[in-house]
Image 1 (cartoon, rainbow, N blue to C red):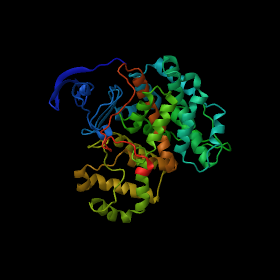
Image 2: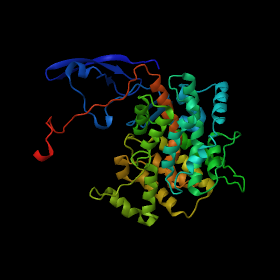
Image 3: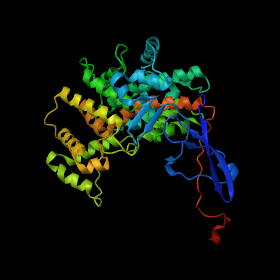
Image 4: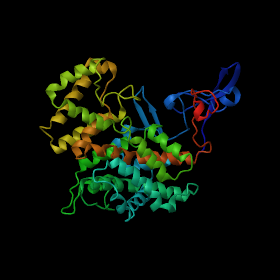
Length: 434
């Protein structure tokens, strides 16, 4: 990746009487960045930034977020335009290659992905090593990490051809692996992919078809899930993406890096937010109890929090939630869902959040996790599959970020520093002298 960093200014840092002049780089969008790589060399001092919330760990051309304005761009394209007008594989091509494909490029890409969806037959034996009640994310971490043992012919990260093969394999096989994890947890036989179906329809069929009868695809449901996948594809340098980059900086193979990303995503503070939102709706239980929970949510001394409202990054309306809200209502209408207490609670909470002055003032708008949890529940997925679906979609972003890192001439092995506050240097004491 060719660097496009352009110096716009200089920042002066004085530490312990020593001043360092450091370059300031300008981004296409977003804040300027002070290049502190030479700070230690000049001043013998590090910066302290827990969570790296004020530190740019890399240069990237893939995704941009403006949380204050509620903006999310994939390669410069607004997320709502892509979700409404494109589909999963076209957006995947965009994230990987930087531009939307021509008709011929799209056909070649689709064909390559479609013909990589099968998994090694011996991989089925790997699933049988897990307990039947194993969490699907535990299975995903193990199976994806094991792919390098089955596809070791594409683990040379220094070979551009092998990188491309590994990338296509990861994107193509992830739905098959996820569907197999779901089928394994239900005790049903695995359903193999079909080359005549599009990416998301194929996944739906692998999850819900049974050998006894053919599965009837519902285009409204498939379209909604496709939108969920697009909306979750990438989100800048979040915890799981940073994990993938950090693992990849050591030269680890791409399958191991994606497995590391899945493990990071599994954390409830990251990928489990939509499941938490659904659990909250179940806790509320019925519409008549909503006023009590709203009152609790407004009470600073009450530990109860409304899940699925507001966002750490988006201080305005989550741009993904706008698309997800429409898709959610389309699914509920298509399924003619009525007399479902949980969904009734969700719709009433949504109405209150969009009208109540407290929510508006605090900018506690329903976010994507609120709507995606409801939608996935309506589609028939159990809550322990929600993060698996997130991982399936985010694999595209992870692998795009991994390739960008590999091709970055400034890339180095990750090595965060620390402030040591432990015991000062001391001498070892023999046991009888302690």
